Length: 96
Image (cartoon, rainbow, N blue to C red; front, side, top):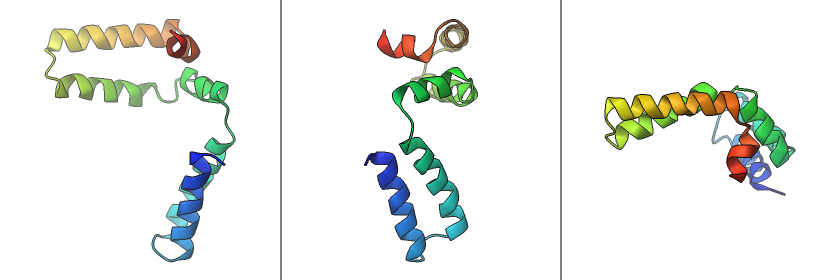
């Protein structure tokens, strides 16, 4: 059992007890059940698929803004991030 299985089970329990809407819980349960079956290589593949690039970029930009980086620094970092997404794999980045 892993953390994703625990999350799915907690949504099942909350839905069964009427604490949350069953339809909303089912979507989260489906995702957590899927994630529970994934290996680390599967997670690398998901990131490499570019499915999450826009979300990751938005997090990065928000973090830089929250850290009060100037516009030039934000632009430089975002350009570097775009380059890394196109030139490096997630596994290369994580093992670096």
